[in-house]
Amino acid sequence: MTRTTTGFAHQRLDAFHAAMELTLGVEQLAATLPRGHADLKDQVRRAASATMRNITEGANRWAPRDKAARFVIARGEAGECDAALEMILRLELAHAGDVQSLRRLADRVGAMLTGLIRRQRTADAR
Image 1 (cartoon, helix red, strand yellow):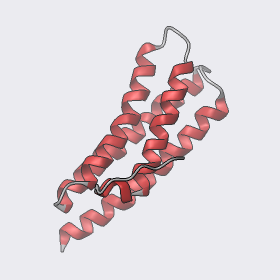
Image 2 (cartoon, helix red, strand yellow; image 1 turned 90 degrees about the vertical axis):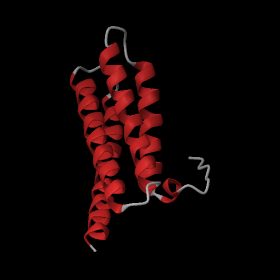
Image 3 (tube, rainbow, N blue to C red; image 1 turned 180 degrees about the vertical axis):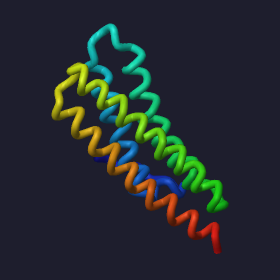
Image 4 (cartoon, helix red, strand yellow; image 1 turned 120 degrees about the horizontal axis):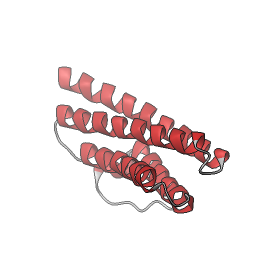
C-alpha cells in the first residue's frame, strides 16, 4: 500500500488509512458485481467513501465535539457499508472470501472509530 502524506491531521490516523483501503477494496469489488444490482453497488460504494471522507473531516476539525460528531457519522457509514457487503454476500454476487475480507476491514474501521469517539468525548468533558 502506498501512502501519500500531507500536513493534514487525517494522514496521521490509522483509521483513515484503513478506511481508504476499504474504499479502494469496495471499488474493486463493485466493478465485478453483475448487472441488475446498481442500487446495491452504488450504496456500498457511497458508504465506504463516506466513511473515509467523514474521518478526514473529523480529523481536521478543531473542537473535540466537532471531531466526535464526524467520527460518529463515519462509524455509521462503516456499519452501512458492512450491511451492504453482507447483502452482496447473501445474494452470492461476489466471491465470499473477498466480501468477508472487506467486512473484517469495515469492522476494524468501526472499532478504531469507537476509540476516536471516546477519546474526543473525554477531551470535550475536560
